[in-house]
Length: 424
Length: 82
Ligand code: SF4
Ligand code: SF4
Image (cartoon, rainbow over all chains, first blue to last red; front, side):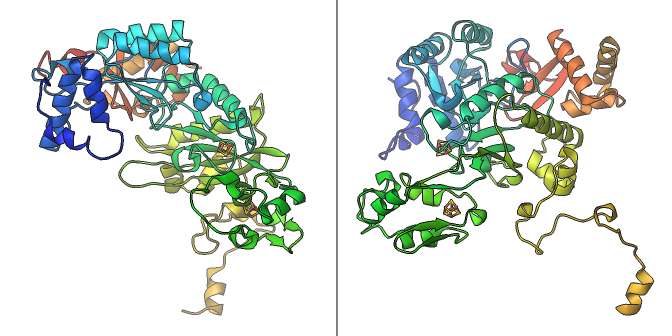
């Protein structure tokens, strides 16, 4: 018999999709404190306001992130969730687990927490939901000593870096995303665990422009794999697609009859820069005009492959807030080699951190700061030259202003002479 | 390179005088404007470890405060009224 009636939550169990309410009810049979969670969440729906207090002062010794304090504002009514903290755990690169590891982590959380997890949070962390203050150090000790696993980032920190599964399974990866993600996680431990930034900062690594971790939309610094030579073409395989011997998109859209594959309609005409041509026998690509959108490669993976001179593009300034103000990242470094020891990348990262820490207002993300102070100022600070590709819409919104020293011969302004020629 | 003990003292003096119970990291820079934020961070980290300063976080952002000033851990658990 449930401790509280939950008519509003019960609505969320209807329909074909999985329901967090059903999950909590199932777990409440093992962990009666979760009856209080159901009761409090039901009341929040009824009152149309949260009954969690805002934030908290909890953590593990030496760390300023990874634990998010959650306290009920009605502890007498819902004592089971009087404190119900969240722990963010740094996920392995590419989200690979052994069964043994998963069993161990769930065992810790059944013993020391509510048993509820969120696999994975939007930053990528393993999110362990609901424990009490005395358990925090215990969980941390077990994670670090028995599982060789660290807490992730929260608050005004570098957040847990995340990556696509990259070279472990995907032939399109242009750099080893898992290695880069792991490396940067280790190198920037201080930034991850000790808050000193104006706000959150996210690194995301995608091995190619398909951008499976949505780095371009969700990270302050997005690393997206690319190449700078030519797309590799296997003309015999192109014929295979044209003749219907190979399935387009590797059969990914086979659930419906799309008719016979039409290379002109489905590939050539959909190339965003119209840099491909097909004369019935040979596929040609004007690689200079290719923007590496991946469309043709996605459709004909047996025939087309990324080039061999690989690295990544770096974009800055995205954020994906829940309510409004979404912003996509801006391309700043078109190509950089992404290989150990990553020294060039470190130098860039550290210039960005310094500039943002110095100029960013409290709670101002990097993208907002760039918008406030201009891309030009940002480029100056990180010592990157402006290039035409950074200009989204030439002439309509120019944000690069030349200074006299940038122009050979400079200029002198003689307003009187100008007005004489162009009277008002 | 600032003397860290000196810097810690300046930060605590500033923090104790502050009318706000919690402050952003950047604001702590005002305690010693002549010093870079990286130096400030070292001193602040040491002060947190010595449990003179403490951290408050909403999950998305973080603030520092003098331990025991403003909202306390006990008050959060509903044991005391502020
Ligand atoms: S982003 Fe590219 S490399 Fe990474 S998994 Fe997706 S398709 Fe593969
Ligand atoms: S990757 Fe995109 S831009 Fe490049 S050739 Fe293929 S379709 Fe065109």
